[in-house]
Length: 137
Image (cartoon, rainbow, N blue to C red):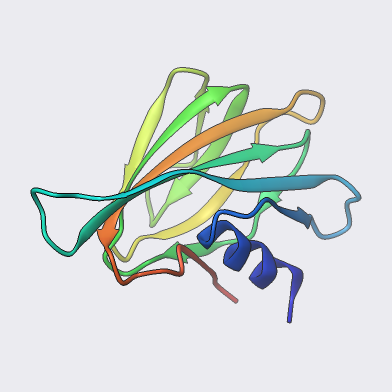
């Protein structure tokens, strides 16, 4: 099993996961922050995860649970991101973006090679979607 798969599974179940970026000894960590069923939307849940990027690290291209609408908020530092064929953009602390269901997150990385960055990703998804992130080959 590839390290990214382990990281995705751990992130989906609320366990801290560490992933080395190809050619790099630095790491990214993913940790579940919050999870709850939505009482006014039967069959739907909300899940929040923190993604901490060490300087110069990145997530591989990936998709999320098919039903997931995602709100991403940069807590600290700067994150470079591209969703689907949208523009590649750097988001700074306090800025945010969203991802529609079935979106491809082709670029997600720390925009700095010297400072860490933190992202909070909030998923609204079908309660039975347990795998939050799937790498794209």
